Image (cartoon, rainbow, N blue to C red; front, side, top):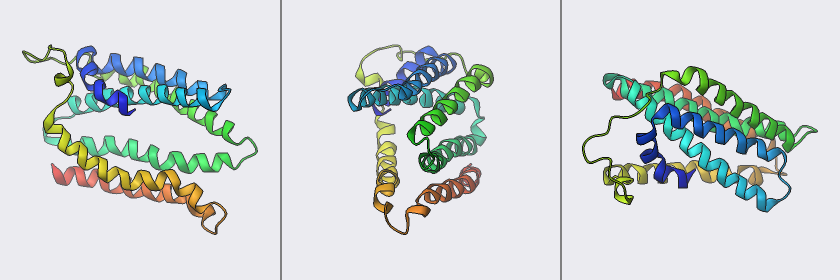
Length: 212
């Protein structure tokens, strides 16, 4: 996903948000299905890389489409509601995965659930995604190629803020299960993500309207 972010914005501007969303979600769906048949850890890591690239392009296309569609006077509110969707998936995903992994089907249940969600995303993009802008009108000089057209110094500072802010959550997300395994907190580990999702769902829309 990180690798895709460096070029996804440039690609989306030239192909259009809808076309890029359809291609990316199709690739994301195929790579998610691959989790059900992976034979070893090496292939699993390679598949994970491809899956992340698909998600990176997909999320960039949707985020761009949302920002282009929402009226300027309600842009922060629109960004807040869009952010709720990603925050809910980050919060509910690990919670559901931990519950499914404890079933007799183990990780296979997690993979099937992930495939079902990816399939639903594909259906929604193919139907409801028709309202996404087809192509972005580029200003004079923006058709140039090269790495300088893919990076914007004005956005780098905000990106660094998000890097450090997101690190605090990502560090806990990655090691929470291992840290609580075998302790009295193991049963409550999954609820950590659910509480996070609820908190974000409540505050994001309010924060967006306040910012506007």
